[in-house]
Image (cartoon, rainbow, N blue to C red; front, side, top):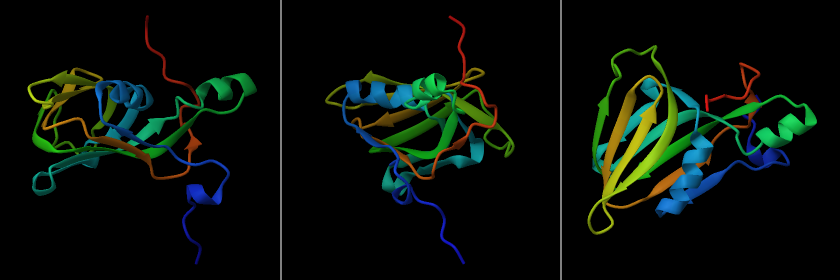
Length: 159
């Protein structure tokens, strides 16, 4: 029986980033733009004050090189985790629809008092998630090896 492939087996290592301030969050938000995930891949654990998403993330960090070398574009499975979460709310999506696939466009930070605030996760199609938190404490970690993007294309946005 063989083991699953791990990043450590190849020359390339997966991303593991931590955001602790608004500038860090901009980097994470740019890397998760156009990530897709089934509605069932959202996990809110109130006792641990953690909200997490298992995403199929487009590898924006590799896209310029793929274009230049004529290589195929890639995606990778990643966990986007928010810690110190006090409350989670959603709008514009049916969480009971197990077949619903969501597209994450951005994560914005709305500061409150004493370091607390709210994350607003904007989804394609007028959906949104709001996370009330005590502070910015976000982790993005790739958990599989990259794979060829099924569409073969890089996501595009109208200007």
